[in-house]
Length: 333
Image 1 (spheres, rainbow, N blue to C red):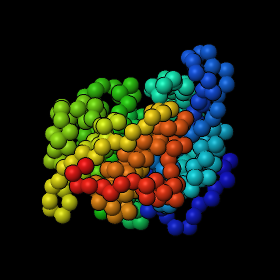
Image 2: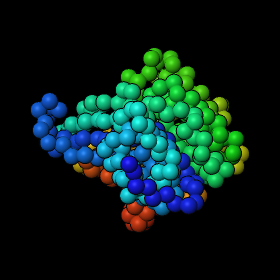
Image 3: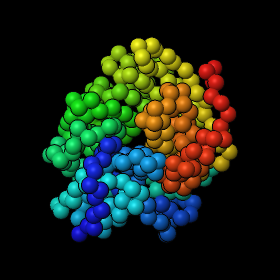
Image 4: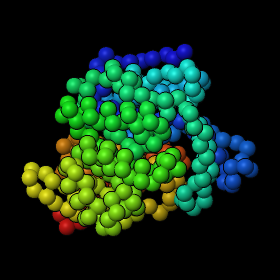
């Protein structure tokens, strides 16, 4: 059913999770009253894959979609963004997940309704990573969403992180909490902390970090994960910026980088994914931790200024232009 355009060389970055067809309301108001929508692609993991691909990285996407028109749409959208879809499997027994999103006034969080229960992506299994060449991977990006979808997708998450770790691949992990998908808060906390224990770079929000670790301050939240093997923990503080604590070259450092002022917030969904794109891309570019955190803040700020989850993610050319306009990054910032 699909036309595929698979590069010969395997991807050196891999992301996995659930991509959904998203219908965004054209007008303000409750979903029950909206008559017109426009179709886009949604999914935290796909946002990061697209963002890294726009910056010139060879990114692979692993998931399942249904043998339906929405699955075709998702594949075509991802390939048009330069994402390698050789590991996107077609599930003939289950459909592609859908979501509908309101237009919210004044940059407030929009209401979202999901139609994803029993989706193709929720039926991912460890067998789906059987053809991934982990020896060719430079980096794996993981989130807490796939393990929340089903037991089999949770098993896939565990296997992917173990394989990446065994092959010396760097791993980033964004908890991306979805409490409604879990049987209990304890199950969510224990599972995500277990998975985070395989990661090098952990990127929670402050509220997420407090819930997962039981600690209140960014310093103590970061310490919780550093004690479990992480090399860096970067905590999103919202408009205030981000906090970093990590170990590089045997030396620990910690600091806060202020956020960028945004005068016209349009859509907050996807800001955290933009932050992840910024941090991960900068670290893979060999930038310093301080530069990586500032790039995360910068791309996160770009993401909230447009409608849609990934429309504000910049190209490499656009990023170079944005960073060229920034003042020198002082150690005291």
